[in-house]
Image 1 (cartoon, rainbow, N blue to C red):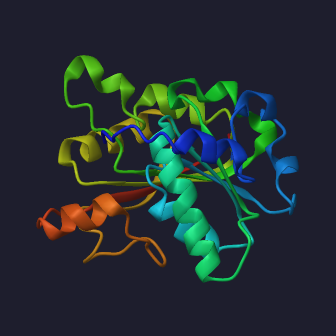
Image 2 (image 1 turned 45 degrees about the vertical axis):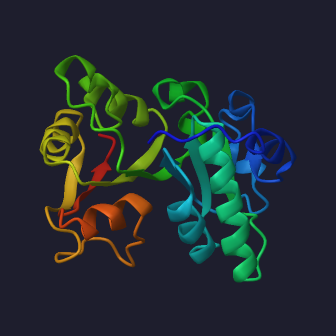
Length: 222
């Protein structure tokens, strides 16, 4: 999603208690960055404006969350969304961290020691042209990277509106040794997620009459 430059975003992020600007320094040490170090860690790749992660994290204080995006403007909006949602619930955002990084280089900031239990990928760029498909966040190339820091039996929750991306992703997961635990071509009429949190894109596509495709995949070490 393209978004206009927001001059306030960078200054606000730099002063935020739950934003990290140098994630490379935390590789293998993410547990220690949270107040409750014993909580499992879940990860959102491409958090956008933060509507999903702010609601998810504030509803699950027993889990720590890392949300990644590459655009300051997006992260600035996500930061404000987190603050608003947590304020409405009268709690402190102590179980969430926002950070800026290129997901294609994710192995520079995460490894096995971080024990990521779950990854969320919501409405990522479908990259429909053949030569660009390796950029897909669910492509085999990326899944092989995620396996380097996923905990044993770790899961990936994936949602999309794009039919081709979804059917291709089913093949990507199987090629990479993931087991598809659940899948649906119509999430809102055939729910596979407990307490599904609707994202901004999800509502937009649903309102247009487009079915939401979703899956849960798990990777188990042999």
